[in-house]
Length: 149
Image (cartoon, rainbow, N blue to C red):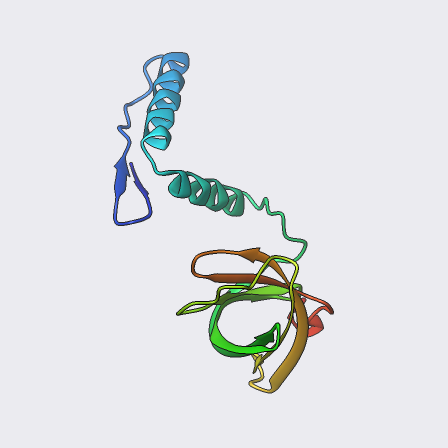
């Protein structure tokens, strides 16, 4: 069985026909633990996130859908641009190329972008919920109600 991993690595886990169920489960668990321990911490976090998503477990109150939409936003009286890579009624992740120093969790921002379904420009207030190397997760002050489907 192949399990995709980040950064071009593929983890190979050997699968054997069950001879003795208890022994087989022990082998599988052992192989999984070794594979996970061999991953970088970021890969471990991503795997956990992927597994939670696959099982319907999420910290988010509302689900998100993938998209790729240009966005302009202001934060601390500075104008930025980036791309929304996922969106839901409660927030977005904005991928930002270039430097965005000084943006912190909890900061308020105003985002302007075309609605992913209608294309009509949307202007929303939000608060930065997470800062990553590639961008920021934003929680909307008011739900984008029409994405609740």
